[in-house]
Image (cartoon, rainbow, N blue to C red; front, side, top):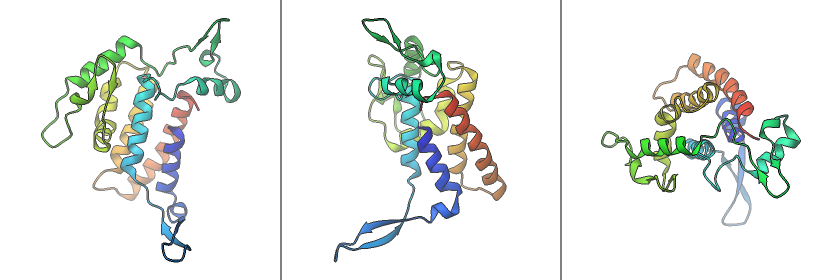
Length: 208
């Protein structure tokens, strides 16, 4: 998650990186022709949203807080409270501070189930919520776009520790701002400065 955001920031703010050339095969003679590198911001935002939501909500098979990440903690990080616990017969994974408890997760899904949007603003996200399995199904790019730009701070407000909620809200504001109709130079420079601090916060919160 953090790596994808960092890569996007590099391309977005660094002119010499934005004009980097990718080579694609030419259909006639098998040669290569240069083509500009394009960033699909909507797709990047969908990936970031899914990584954040699935990790905070501890979605089985999709969370980034998995066994492999916990093993990396031992090698790359000094976080004793995040290391796996061996009791001889099984391995226990201590709950991270950025993961909601099961009953709290259910509250979030019930809240999403009750959401109603103005006509044309977004699809009916409530239809994508399965409260019994505690999962979201069939989220499209635009659904993730709406969730990332408007719902992340609301969904996790008072449910996550303030430092974690603040970092997620800053990411929310960043994507909302770069999607604005108007951006002046001062605003872009401020975004470039602030996002570096936000990424540092995310690196201190989430696993590698």
